[in-house]
Image 1 (cartoon, rainbow, N blue to C red):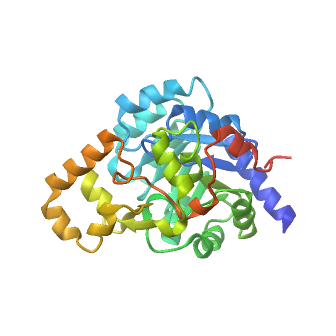
Image 2: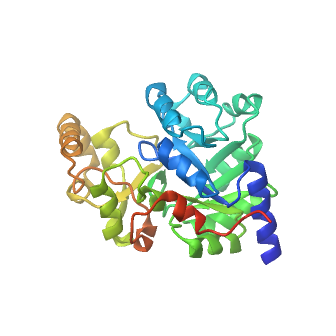
Image 3: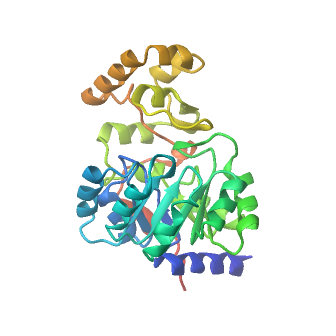
Length: 313
């Protein structure tokens, strides 16, 4: 079993050109160029959270990476060929497509000679990623922070995805913050892991210190999946997607009253806008996964990733 796990990790590292089988999740508006570069400096592969592919945001963040070898992630349901081509023009080490069927956009990535990473929250989505020619598939459980599907937890999903797409390396994502989670994921057939919330609480992440401190102070019971912040911030995501965040007065007041909240959307948008402008992290969104129990400090992402085992012999 140990030899098999080592072989899987080594193959993942070979495909992505890295030393440690750790990927930095492309968290939109959080994973900028500095964070991605810091993850790569630790031996993994950092991804800039390109979101909907806005070049006015993405270009400066690529510059912030200062020539480091990093990838770019995009939100598949809200981008098209133009945004994918724009991201590929930055010559990323890999392109990560999340949240929707990647098969239509995949040829652009392959034509550019860039490894394709695809995220999946169901076995069907993983099979679509395999058909799209993904070099790596990320199995995301519902423990994860930020957006995803609510259906399946990682430890049930992960081995099912591994079996469905073998021999493509599978990365586990959702609630993993340390080497214990890494070892558990490998025991279920993963080749490596993706870190999201743990890297949010790092010095290089693109948010204020107060938001990062909330992650340090919180526990998994303080998180909740909802569409409340999508209504308050926009845009709303396709049916089936929710976002896991830290609880707040906004989630406490409006979960279960989403239609009423939509009817008052301008008021809700202004409330969240003011909270964000004022730095009120008790009210504005702070995305967080269930693994926050394991976060007790705010170190450099380079040091966080360097604590994981080498994935290449």
